[in-house]
Length: 409
Image (tube, rainbow, N blue to C red; front, side, top):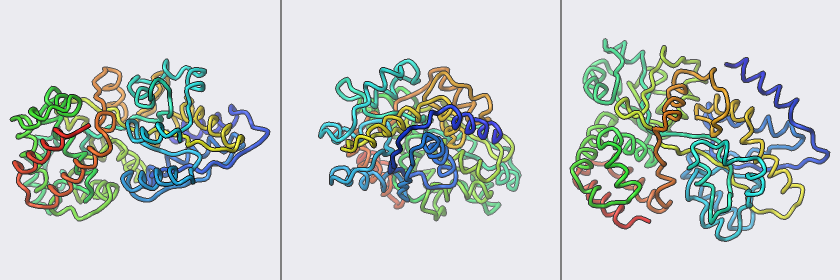
């Protein structure tokens, strides 16, 4: 795969015409882990090959840390030239204020509607019929990553689904292995909650709550079972004393933890560590119960600027991010799925192939960012942070969750 990526890098350098003028574009993002950094370099390399200059504006921490900084700069009149945000509703207020560049003309010229798959990704970039962002990948959170070495040490077969994983936990603990790695941040705990919801409550109940925002369904028996399952998972992760998601992933990579519920971006960390899917670790989409994935992910927005050369370079970067070569090079490193439905990823590893098959079969859901407002998302994350770090009962957590859904936008 490395040879394949190098060849793509060379072909991009040869294929992209050199500009007579160049511009420095500051690009903000929160891709700072080993795997993420390797992936974002593919964007920078391709853009620099055009004669422009990618000025990296990485912000350490999660999206929850970076987004307020990004939004504050734009509102404060100090915009970057381009910025990562997630698909969905995070930029609505900035668009309404006229602070984001309209990409509709470029999107129509290049036929984005014909190549972006699923179409909901481009819909999430659209506001009042106009397109304001370019989607660059599909990330899904419904995965559990399992360490072969940890289960071998405990004398166990690698579980085939979440239920088998829970049943194996006592043996892992007897062998001195943490069953479930979990970073101490609300977004990670909320991600695990969402993944367990899909597995335990099922798709229909999930849709009623997350898409239709039906508070009575959130108060029902399906979600009672969810909160009881999450309370059990909380105990499996009780000794997981790490903060960041990639630190938790490293516990799985080093066989100190049996598994981690995390999005498919975890693949990048396994790849940087030289591990092989199916040999050193196993990935189970939908926790091995319901093989269905949400279509979250990342998109790039381009704040309105005055300089004409910068404006031209912004559009060139937008075009480049969705080009076939860049889509392949970036997503192979990132562990995410491409947004283009017309490119060859036969060189992708076992986990990416699983994701590609699910996508091809149409077994996808909209992500929370596409369904719920940032305020509602933050309330749920705060609840999950409190729930996972305390002895709050499953019943009390469900009651608080029902109130959030009832008041959601």
